[in-house]
Amino acid sequence: MTALQESIRPSADLRNHYSDISRQCREDNEAVIITVNGRGDTVSMAYEQYKRLKAYTELLEMLIEAENDVRDGRTSPAGQTFERLQIDALSQTPEIGIVPADSFLRRNGFRVLITEKDLVFYKVNKEEMTVTVYAVTDQRQDYISIVSG
Image (cartoon, rainbow, N blue to C red; front, side, top):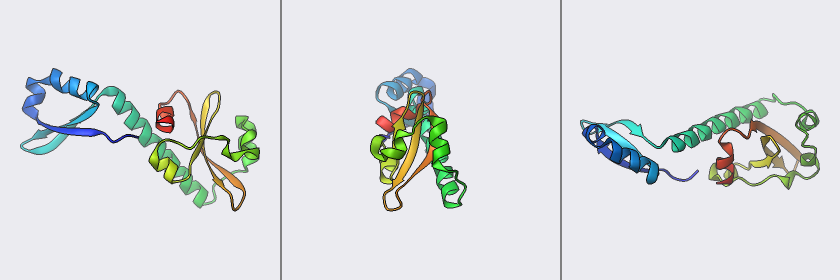
């Protein structure tokens, strides 16, 4: 996910220059921090940016929960998962998925297999020769922009 540019404007600007702030959010891809008495109060951003940020947050929460499940042994055999998702190729060629463009996902070793309908987030443990599926998400979510940049 790319860094979000920010600017700060007083609440009076929101009342008096809404269209300028709206354009700044949409066209300049900026988050505008609205202050009251010199302190941050609210943030205004383009709706598309908000949707991407929300999807990113949801994805990270899902993957953190999956990491906890793996750590605590709440897993099922991969064969059942692969068969259900029709992704048998993953067990034979674990590198088939892409390395995500997102730095957090890449740094934490995630790969993503893009199927006809789903995105499959997984990790490969070469030493143990295992593949762990962490999450399967519907492509209709905005996760594809997180994965591909």
